[in-house]
Amino acid sequence: DSGVTQTPKHLITATGQRVTLRCSPRSGDLSVYWYQQSLDQGLQFLIQYYNGEERAKGNILERFSAQQFPDLHSELNLSSLELGDSALYFCASSPNEGYEQYFGPGTRLTVT
Amino acid sequence: KNQVEQSPQSLIILEGKNCTLQCNYTVSPFSNLRWYKQDTGRGPVSLTIMTFSENTKSNGRYTATLDADTKQSSLHITASQLSDSASYICVVTGIRSGTYKYIFGTGTRLKVLA
Picture 1: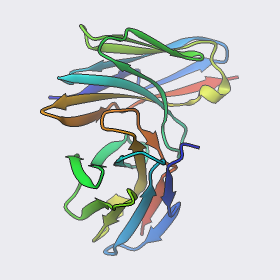
Picture 2: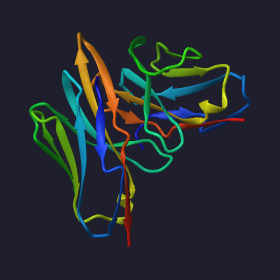
Picture 3: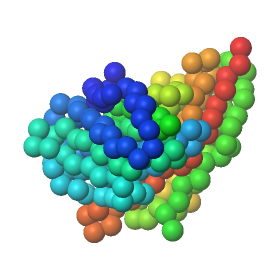
Picture 4: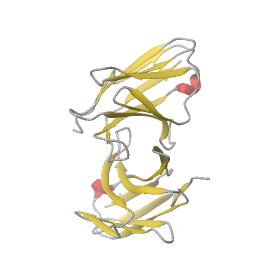
């Protein structure tokens, strides 16, 4: 158990809908990262927050947005969902930037 | 262009045998290199993390090496076990002007057979 929690574990929704994925980092970790992993694909870095501020952006679509709240938990919002958005979404946290990242168990999103 | 390439893409070995996975990168400036193990459908778990000055780091039966001059790293697994069956991901962190970049390799899928 990495200490990173993600909810929900599974999510099934229809195309065009909007969902919110939630992540609670390890206690004391200030940095939160979001990743997407499609079936049999590598991890794609989406976005990173550090102590509430956006710090790095990867291949995140404009339909996706994220934020980190004062209590350091983070939410990833996915809107106008398409079939291709079906994937595992992982959250990771680290004490500081550039350090070892601890991954959560992931949220499996299925868009039908 | 910042890239991380891993080889082989997949590997099948018999239980008890050793194997070596490769990671070549072009990320610059370099901050650190990490190896992760990812079981199917689960979050990656860190095996090792190495900075520029470190050549070797071990974690049980896993030993990672880093040659910062040639920009190559390897992960050696000794006396493989069935539980080693997983994907192994190499991640290189670059830093420029205080901003970090995280470049992931596509992974090596290892299968250990009894």
